[in-house]
Every structure is written in C-alpha cells, then in structure tokens.
Length: 90
Length: 214
Picture 1 (cartoon, rainbow over the protein chains, first blue to last red):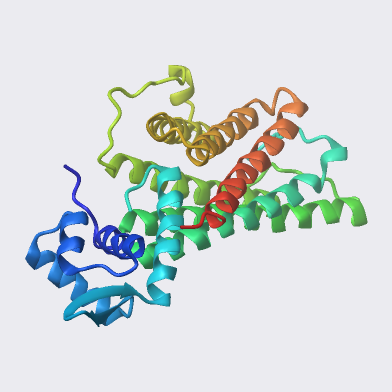
Picture 2: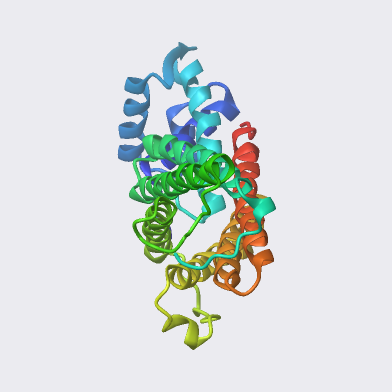
C-alpha cells in the first residue's frame, strides 16, 4: 500500500467535507480512511491553516470548507495532474 | 562544437527557436516550483531545477548565437563554430553542460521513483556510447527518461503523460539529428524544429493542467 503524503490526506479530508457540505468528524475519519488520532491531528491542522471551520448544528459539531479550503482543492488537482504527467507522486 | 552545417537561410531562426524554447522551459520550471511549494517534495524541486538549468542553457545559446549571426549580417563575419574561445562555441558549451546537468537530474528523478520498469532497453548502438560527445550522452540519458515517461503514460493513459513522453522523445530526436548535422544540413534544421516541438508539447501539457478544475 502506498503511503499518502500530508497534502494528499489534506485533500482527502477536504474532499469529504466538500461532498457533504457539512461533515461530521466520524464521517471524515471513515471516508478519508484515517484512524481517530490521525483524523483529529489533521482536522486540527486544517483548522489552524484556515481550510475548514467548525460549526455547531443541532447540538453536534460539523466541519465546513472555507474559501481557502475550496482554493486548496482546485490547486491540489492541478498539482496532481502536473505530477502525474511526469510520473511523480504528490 | 566544431563543424556544424547550418543553412544560411536558417541563420538567426535557430536563435529564435532557442529563445522561445527557453521561455517555455522557464514556464515549466516556474510551475514545478509552485508545485514544490505546495508538496514540499524533493522530486518536484529537482524537476523545477532541471527545467531552470535547461532553459538557462538555451537562453545562453540564444544570446551567443544571435551575437554571431548579427556579426555575420552586419559586419559580414563568418560564424566559425570551431574553437572553444569563439563566442558561439562558448554558448554551445554552456548549453551542453546545462542540458547534461538537467538530463542527469531528470534521470535521477525517475531512477528514484518507486514505480520501476521491469526492464531497461538499451536502444542506442554500442559504438555511439564510446563516442565522447555531449549529444551522445544527452541521447543516452533522454532514451532512459523517455522510456520512464513512456512507462508512466502506459500506466496513467492520460494525454498529459503522453505529451511529456513525446516531448522527451523529441528532445532525444533533437540530439540525434544534431549528431547527424555534420553530414547533412537538413539535420540541423529538423533538429531545431524537433526541439521547439518538444517544448510546445510541454506547454500544451501545462496549459491543460492549469485549466483543470475541481
């Protein structure tokens, strides 16, 4: 199994949140294929970087994408395309 | 770089081709640096460096050859291309050293990648490899780079990967045709069209990548 890079994991988490518009932490760890500890670590990092925001809805926490998060996704896709053209890992 | 047969009507056109290729190469290098800033991967930085060095070499060749052609057109001084101290030869030396460094970097990037091919073809005849010439070494390195890019294209099946493979193959053809240029002046002309087309392929790939949206 190929080890995912940090930005690949960032992208996977952000993509889950983008698809669901508002994602619960359990959905993120399940769909981004991460352990609880790792998903918590990366979600905290994404919050610090300003890619996602925590919102409270009906007594539970969910995560939504910020404008910076949307921009990261579109930039990452370009980076991945460019790297794949040369056969390099992202 | 002695005894190149360059048709007079092609004078200055090759300088323009070097310049255009250098600009395209710098664009690839700039984009690779942007990718490196995001990924932090050494392979992306090496890609940026390889194209920056290659483009700098092409730019140097563009400037020195332009100077030589201007001397020819204005002062009617024949380009000699025969001694290392000649300004045009200096340009060639800078270009060849820069291009070799760039090709070594590109080959190192592919050699370090996990995705290894099952076999490595040695498509170059043996007598070529014992001939000590920059073009031969470049051709040897580019055959490996093209092969690895081709393996990547076979796996990914994307047009962008194909464009990169074709670009490296055309750069290889450029060096092969330059090797033949002492025998036929058309080789020199075709070599330069091949080089320009290689960078056009890379530019098309870059344009396609920058238009992808999430």
